Image (cartoon, rainbow, N blue to C red; front, side, top):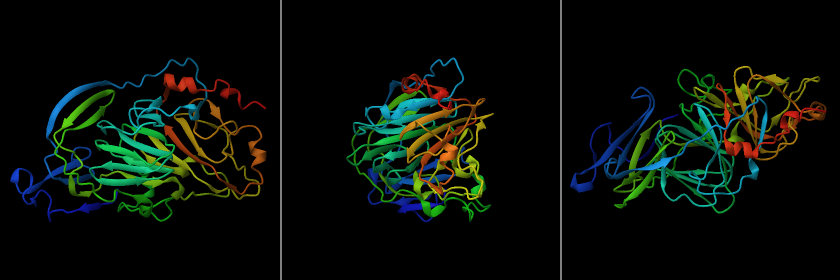
Length: 387
């Protein structure tokens, strides 16, 4: 990420940021370094009204296991997640659907507001906002979001989600590895190359700081894999007066993706948006279709030899599929072919554009379905390619 700065800072790192009178009359704001891969990669430095280490109580808060269901056959799946009822809070009401060691995909349709702060100590999160508007509140400040935003939250970011009135619908991608941009999009100086499908102007970091000066007990639910711990802090942690660096939450809107098209059908990596060590995320955005006079304008049949392919259908008519709907999730696993449904090749012949919007997650290790996923699965989907 590019370097950002908010609020007030001392002229040099690790020097006194003077405050008058300051906590306990010590005369300074308190520095916190948030670093990645030890001290070797990107970092940010924040300055708090009080030391961020003021913990009053630590208590076990149970477990949140994501358990794979037994599935005895290798086949395609269609999960009708639009059938999920609104339930619970934005974090604790999430429903896990697909998982492996690198990623877990959740759906969240909250019915209630978030009541306590949350921190994922083990994983990064990409929150795709299907429906709803609101704000992500963190010690980095206020980050507004809107429909079709990817909200990228670095691990160990304490946050609270606030939503405006109205339906809210999220796809949550929980990543064990660091979420970054495809390396081929960046020049050696770290800038997006000319010709990349998006650039720095499309990325939006936090705006105004919160700087909450609240000396009161504040609980934070910390998730570490399946283990939950509740921390009670002696003050509110969103008490930052300034920060700078390259680690912070940000948004990127899927409608800002600039599709790259060709005379014939381009492969899915052309739609790549994020990459991690264990999977990639792609954005299928509205675009001009292939222009060759004999072009087949829907994807060719494909066998995923070494990856599982997940598609989350957001908006519009997906040209190669029939029977899917908004909020459908399809899983096309490794080892068996999938492709356009019968009739879609002919139907696309005279089309010049597609209005589809979908999120694709391609994993490099097999995904397992959870029991809630089985409850949403269409058992007839593997036969949907028959004429």
